[in-house]
Length: 325
Image (cartoon, rainbow, N blue to C red; front, side):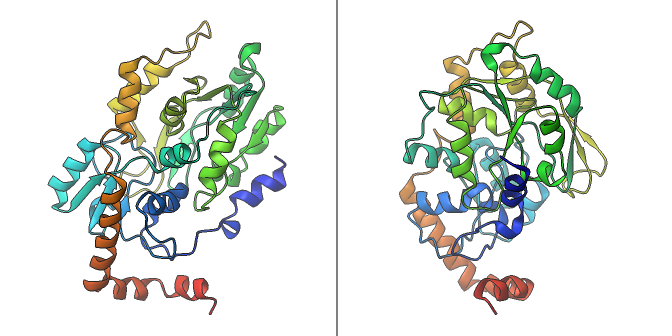
């Protein structure tokens, strides 16, 4: 992709957010909203009145502050353990969700292309409240050292790293840089799997979301290169300027999926694959029919408890923009 393409796809002004107004942002990002509606046979023009994990999946079982404080009547998460913990902490209903990304892939029968080649790497990314700290130049040098069988290497960057200008570093090192675009765009997941399916291998320098998605798709995944550290800048869920240590789950994934010093791919045995499927909610996710009932229940709850009045008062500008006033 050219720099113009990268900047265009990551610009929030160019992100198509679907036909409905967003009520709870976590249930909409990364094409979640599109696929949750599809999974639950829910009309695309109606708002989702459920809260969910904002990534797929989360590596920490303890709910975040914003997940606890939401006024949504339903919380959706991938992990059965987290669902139980959430209900105990809040007294609100929580259900396991079948990964919206995986649902999209399986429904559309997306598989690795027969002519897939090279490696697509997904570096750990920053966002407006978090900084992913690692030496990008050293990471590039590590990627160049990968054996011929892993080449060519394509770098897929998150929107925040492109908006920070980090793509220029990779391009200056000679790498082709691509992106799935703005995380608010309904076509995010379409672009993501379009990038993934042409990769013979997929890699990152941390566990992230892409690892479980790659393993589920059957594409060899490995962790390699400069290990990153996460520094909190302004996220209220954690102390400011804290270097957050990896969770036990993150550590397990890192160790299990790390590329060996001899460039031997990690072996994903049946037990670990089952663990990943549980992690994605594939074995405990509620059925499509049950999701349908939950989404309608949440909508009626939002209407008849008058939460919509408070939402309108808080979001007058969004409503005017949506209806073109």
